[in-house]
Length: 275
Image 1 (cartoon, one colour):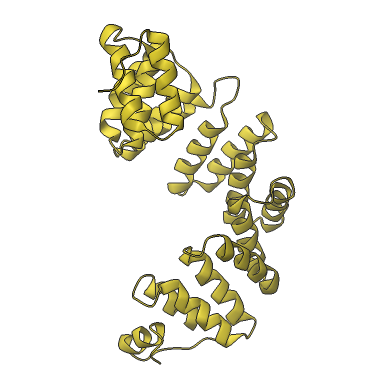
Image 2 (image 1 turned 180 degrees about the horizontal axis):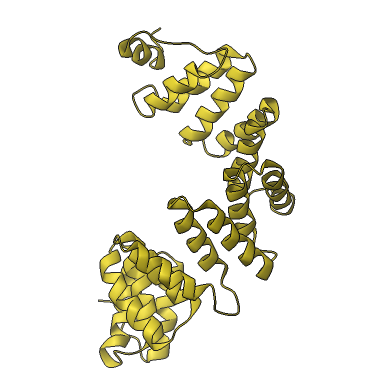
C-alpha cells in the first residue's frame, strides 16, 4: 500500500515529483487525496488534470482543469485545459482558452505554441505566424517559439526568414531536432539538396526510426542524381513493407532521376528489395 502523505503540502510536493518522473497514476492518487479534503484546491485539480492527460483520459482531464482554471486563472492551467479540449474535439473552446492564456503576464511560451499550432491546423497561417511572433517578442530566448515561427514563415513561402530563424536556433542549440529538420526543409525548398541531405543524414543518424527523415533524405539524393543511395534511403523509409509506401512511390516518381511503376505490385516488390 502506498504511504499516505502527512500533510496537504507533502501530498502536492509528491504529486509534482511523480509527474516529473512520469508516474501519472501516483500523481493522480496524491492529487485526488488532496481534493477529497479540499475539493476547490486549484493546484491539486491542475495536477490531477495533468495526470489524466498523460494517461490519455482527456475527457476526465477537462473537468479537473476547468475547476482549477476557474479557481485560479493562469496561463499554464488554461493551456493544459486547451490541450484537453482539443483532444476531446472541442476546438473552438480550446482556441478561446488559449486566447486568454496568451494575454497573461508573465508570458507563458507554451500558450503561444499551442495557439499557433491550433490556428495553423485550421489553415490560418498568417494568424499563426503573428501568434508565434508576438510570443517571441515577449520571450526572445524561447527557442520553441522561434522554431514555430520558422515553420510558419516556411508555410508562407518566406524562406529567407525561415532560414534565418532556424539557423539562429541551431547556433544557440545545435541539438534541437525541430530546428535541424526545419532548416533541411527550407534548404530543400531552395533547391540546395546537398546541404539539406547532410542535415537529413544527421537526423537519421540520431533517430534511425524516423521514416520521414529517411524519405526526405532519399528525395534529396535522387535530386542530386545519386540514384542508388536515394532509392536505398526510400526503401529504408518503408522498412521493407507497405508503411509509407504511397509517399515512397511518389518520392521515386517526383524527381528527374527517379522511376515510375506501371503496376502497384511492381512498386511493392521494388520497396521490398525484390526488383
